[in-house]
Length: 279
Image 1 (cartoon, rainbow, N blue to C red):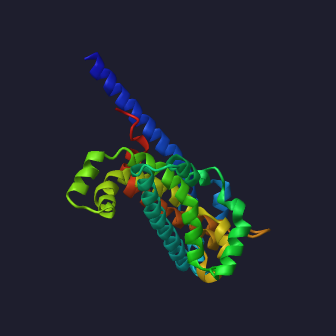
Image 2 (cartoon, rainbow, N blue to C red):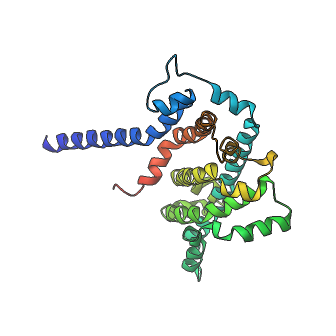
Image 3 (tube, rainbow, N blue to C red):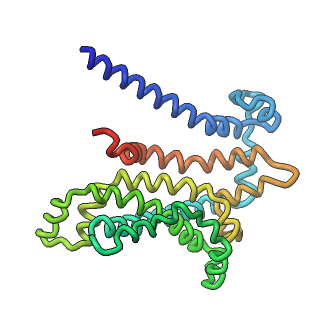
């Protein structure tokens, strides 16, 4: 009885801590959203108060939709983010499978080499990347951003997925080979479904930096037709005057895809993070 009671108390404590962490994490988002529906004076006078009949205003959203091409920026961000995540997960999973499945001389060194990108920020090579994009004619294209973000996310993907690939049963893969499955079918049909939590974790960890990045869109794709949402929102931030209504409204709209991703992948994300923590 004491053990069961202790387990219930631990469960309540864990759920309470999770709820508290969620509230703390969502509080800045809550403040941004409620202030996006206020007048400029109300934003600075009572930033934590809910909008009422006197302070409620949609001027920020009207400005965002009228000034600049918000839907184009949103579309560009979605294309860059989804395309980058697709290539990160595909190539990262294939490299991780090769490192985990096939034993060859230099396997460990190859894994360390592929993981070096975690320790070396890609922004150090901004000048070289810009020169490469100029020579290949990819400046001011979405492909330039997709390639850069794919290179940026691959080291972490290989590092995480290779550990999960090693946990997949060898008996299952050998049974597939006995049944005549090729290595590609073993990879896509048997291995990938078993490492979905890890892939969801990699996707979430890479989506946030890609979606919110300002550096590379400003350097290699600043043209109006390929602006991302983060770069397009900078039009409301001036050297002397900032349209806070528009900035907060743009941020509120930009949060929606990230929140949707967390809702869709929340279970897989938690499984991927906690895998192996409890036996």
